[in-house]
Image (cartoon, rainbow, N blue to C red; front, side):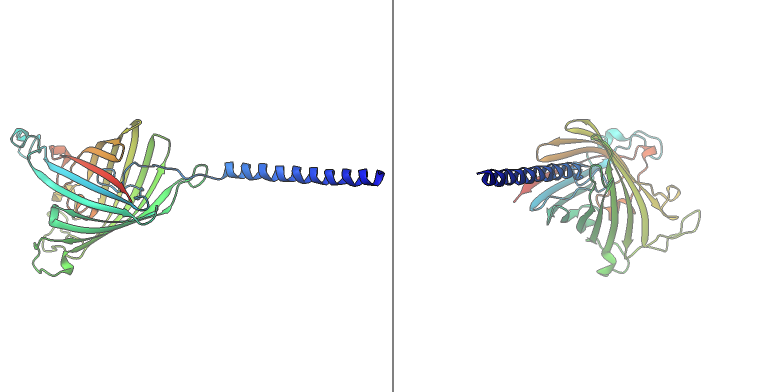
Length: 305
């Protein structure tokens, strides 16, 4: 009988130790799970700020339809200092540019798209891949690669070859959600145009236009309410030929973002008529200082499959 009791005590003692070990393992696993950094979501609400791309990609098996519109210059004061805004209803009677575009999510981090713009009749395909994701208590930034290939439908070049109508953009998007209400990003950008007119000299420094343009963009989102935010972006282009003294300006946009369920709606004001980087960076010729800014909007609608 004593031997049986001794065996039972040993059995229950071992079982108790095993149970304690299992409990400790579970606690350690839960603790590790709690410490595991989680992805930071919704750095920006849409795929565009105003002129700039955001770090966001379209979700897997989701189609996003985008409409962007830029009216004419408000022209509060034209180049001669005369107020002509009333004749165009502050630019609302003129359409500088319109773009329709579709973007589809191959994965949650990879999306492709196609769009058509009025300006230069650009037909453009794009790809965006988010290769780095911000983590809470971990990686402080997100990063993505974005590329555009555009074909102009306008034959406004001396030697009208297919390749001369092509232009390309390569961009790295580096973003961080600093707080729940503040998101910022930097966008180093390279634009290549197969053809540029190099017969025109800069009036001051004698430089000519470049096929390759380097630019750096900055963008921010500042939350106002749960569904409303203030947004802005700016592109600074490195070029001797494309400066203010030669009639070219950096693209600057400010606006209000409104989220309404499946829609993200932006009301903005910008001096750029371009709606893709291939137009925004080389072709901004309006000056904020002379009231040459345009009212516009971006709107997107998401469809899940």
